[in-house]
Amino acid sequence: MVSVNNFLYNFKIVDKRLGNNKIFKNLCDELHKNDMKIIIDAIFNYVGRDFWAFKDVQKNGVASKYCGWFQNLNFGKKSPYGDEFCYEGIDGRFNLVKLNLRNPNLINYLFEIMGFWINEFDIDGIKFDSAEFMDFDFFKRARKHCKKIK
Image (cartoon, rainbow, N blue to C red; front, side, top):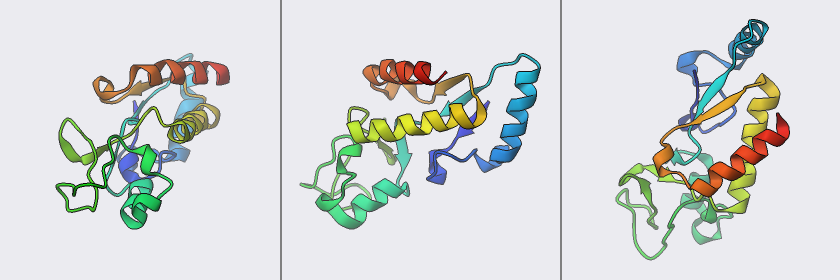
């Protein structure tokens, strides 16, 4: 299983601990030749504090076009890390910033990422990390989106 590691801040790169995109592409080709399926492990419900869109919110505050990407963003109080806003972390951990999986722009971004993995590597499925923290409607929409592609 390959991990799509958003802590690298790029959802289109295989976790470097597991290789790189070229190695993964070759592996996928070989596995498919042997009638095997590829399922990636993806983190699409939270990001690290260094994720580029979160950094934009830190820099631009309420003027950031990415404010809606994060769950319960509140400019009325500071975060435990001293940001000029607060947000929801996964399971109370503020180093894991929860994404707002009902935001249309974020959903489009994540669907584009899913399409990339399907089109670039011909993956057969996605295992969602920390699924207990995900929006169930997002699962249904993601399934429909992926089925349109493959």
